[in-house]
Length: 97
Image (cartoon, rainbow, N blue to C red; front, side):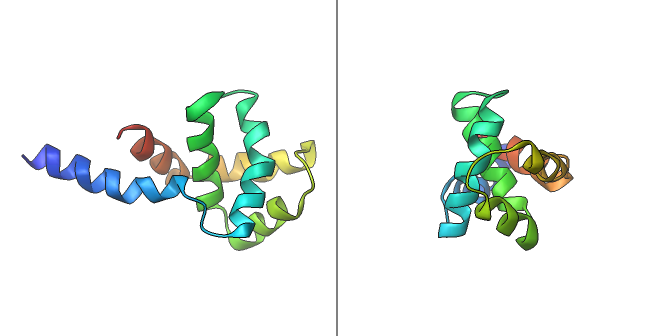
């Protein structure tokens, strides 16, 4: 019973990650997704991208959203956000649903 309740709670917390909450989020996702899908195609790449955008600091998200397309200059930002424990947790929680 406890496992079911925990799984349901994590699912409810993680599900909104895949929903875009602002135009800035949508633009940042549009830039990050092709970068991620080079390594992680399909649904898993979408989850990783959503978690990166969700966990990015405001200045990082603004930089990603202001880019017109993916570029090597953005890779350090994407990698830094991806390496954060919160981002890893978001990915694990979302994919574990």
